[in-house]
Image (cartoon, rainbow, N blue to C red; front, side):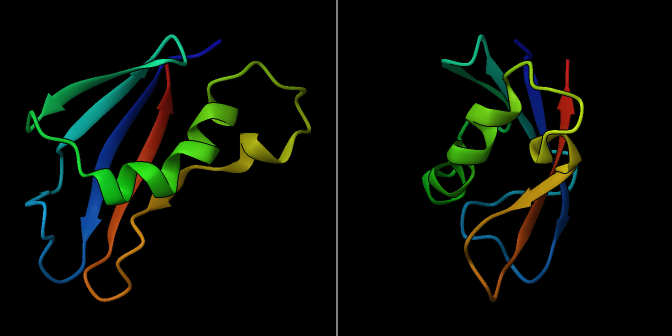
Length: 88
């Protein structure tokens, strides 16, 4: 299994949660969320990303589609926050 670092890559508009480029959080041991910077984690973004993150944390066959995912975004279509994903 992988730990995953989710880092804010871009913010279009104004994020209601206050995310800024470079902010991040971690998914640890496929079951724990660890705050990075800032200490808060947006529930709207997190709930939209969780189905992908649980798959992204797993060891998967090389040709699995989840391995192609490099970024995810929050569901706000006006003030879009894009997160880059990094397996660790």
